[in-house]
Length: 248
Length: 315
Image (tube, rainbow over all chains, first blue to last red):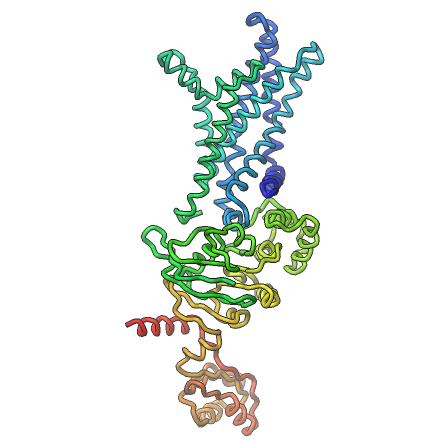
């Protein structure tokens, strides 16, 4: 209940400013452009047997996923860093609120903002469906993967935001960490195949790639849930550090 | 209602609070007085559960702050120093958030928010963004958020700082009106403020309590002599001589003399009120008495004396 109150307050702050509207607009323009060009590319050149499925997998991960990865730090940077810079964190910490309630309220609010982003992308399958109907079931897995991937990015960003009171530091560090988890297996030639297998277990890209095939695998699901849980746990520890550090 | 026992707080090697013990009874208004950096804010932050004490026990309404943190925070309304609020929320929206979080029942929320906005004079800015409000209004929003759940205990850190004189009067009378039903602990560095609102004063310096009394009691105890200020319309030399002649007057200091009005300060031994004698003489001579009042002790005087007394007592 109190978690929801924090969440609604965060949402009110998000939608009070121009950030959400602007970035959603830019995001939809960028992905819309990529949708058109990538789809034309696949249709003209082919790329294997199942052209449309290959297109969706590529588009979901390399375009929607990657653009979201770039955008997430802009929305997570303020979550705790701004409260600390303004001093409002002192209010939250002296209200009858558990740290976990504050954290979850903020986490959920940010996730809801990103559901707006994802909601916008439903337009793309809808366009294709209007031209050529297909089985929509794989999209459940793709969108589940996208939500889990986003939640992971947000958990990571929330943690970084709890460490600093500078939003610039928070957003840039979050971006670097997210990018590292994204590209960790990209240079296949540089590492041994054993190490590559190990690294691919850690890669957000590889697990999201698996989801965007349209298949829900317990292994990938567990990975994202652990990723989220790990960073939320760290966030709680970081929030609790005020108890012994004596600072906000 | 508030019990503080042997409270110690260390920040690294700095000792911010060094063994403070005091208690506040239900319905009492108590002022914490001390210079900046004396540990007032630290004590308040421990009391409100912001961080735990290094040593000692703090309880509110019989509940230990560390063990029952949420229950204690539920009972407290806290106005932090330098009130900072969410600039992108409207006053009404922010107070709604506070009411929700502090567990005001949904049915009573709207009524309670309206009440508290009326009490704090916020009705005309209810739908403005907090970021657009003046300092005075923001301070009032800060007080409103502390009051919204009708707390048993109010902890106010410098409630009148940054307000204009009219607002200070309003806030003081608001605080006074809450006394009796609500237990209030407020900090300030303005002595007259304590005298006007608080029943009792606790004076802190370097994290220790150096005095605890009513504001008048402190002034009476610490003043070495009384000073009375008067303005008299009459001939300068005659007025000064006449005042010097009053029995008990030790010294007369002329402050100014212009347009036939003499302003003077007369010193007399402790406990000796000169006002009656002074007024009688002025009337007898047929002059006009424009002003006569005992000079209050300034915080600086009080402080210097207290610290001296404290050191001598300790030596």
